[in-house]
Amino acid sequence: MKILFLVQGEGRGHLTQAIALGQILRRADHEIVGAMTGKSAGRIIPSFFKEQIQAPVYEFDAPCIAYNAKGKGMNLGRTIGTLLLNAPKYLRAVQFINRIACKAKPDVIICFYETYGGIYNFLYGSKVPMICIAHQYLLLHPRFIFPENSRFSKSVINFNSRITSWLAAKRLALSFREMESRNDLKITVVPPLIREEVLDLKPTCGDFFLVYMTHHSMSQKIIDWHLSHPGVSLHCFWDNAEANEVFQFDETLTFHRINSEKYLNMLASCRALVTTAGFESVCEAIYLGKPVMMVPVPNHFEQECNALDGVISGAGVRCKTFDLSVMLEYLPKHQDQSEKFRNWYKSGASRFVQEIEMISGDFTPVNH
Image 1: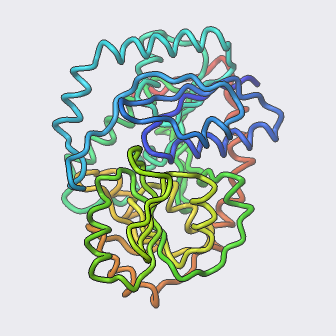
Image 2: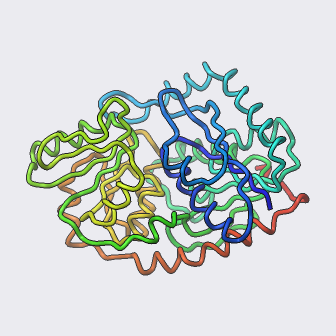
Image 3: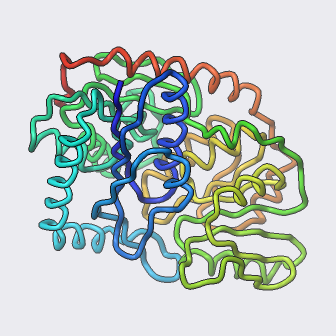
């Protein structure tokens, strides 16, 4: 089959999922004919994606999350305002997606939580079936456990998930652990997607904490903690385009520009991972047997859900701030979940191929 990817470019999670699925599908003799990727102002698509996806990459303008200054998290009002202000530009992006789809003539489009996916289906009535893949679709599952007092936020994120998968053939919900599928809701629960580069790593236990943040504005919180605990060695990855590849703050605090190979090598050799609560980063850490401290971006409900789900799955501990003292206290209590997680993961490759190969030109779209 000829398969076209449509990938949300915000963060790294959906990009690495696309790389991993591409590896699986090529082993099954399917062809990835292109990857359409959303890019927001001031951000670039990481070089590792263009190098590893092994298909033409088509970039388009896409909405993104707006952050407050000094690490104070997501600014919902500015995020919505920017979306409305740039609506004409975003509609042109949907037109671009349609042109690429018409040119590539895929048998299936696979959408990695790109908002334009459902809008494209609605506006163009595409006859090409679309499969939507993301951890966010697990939040539509009746058994998913949400943070307390989150009724409104739950409604908002699930509304967005329905938009991204509007008129799609099925939703594949990535999960830390096994859970029954709900065919009545067109939700198929599947294992995480992890790149081959992670699977080949041989984990060791070093003496440093590895820190990953989705936005460099959060770095001040790390610096504040470090100044009170200079004896703890920290290596941090950020997206600060104005900084050098390596910024040595002092002897025990180093910031690195996002680099996939370097990050994965450090993940394999770190003592523990401290990260904003992105699904993909947590999965990689569990697979390698690394305890995780999950720090949801403030006002980012999806990450709050990821952190709670990660704790339930035994990944580690959650915290509202980058107070690494919480991780130091937690480490002696951690129970390694890597064997159980790896068994769940190993069942995934054949399931993804089967679910995708089942799709044909005659499909019943998701309409709710």
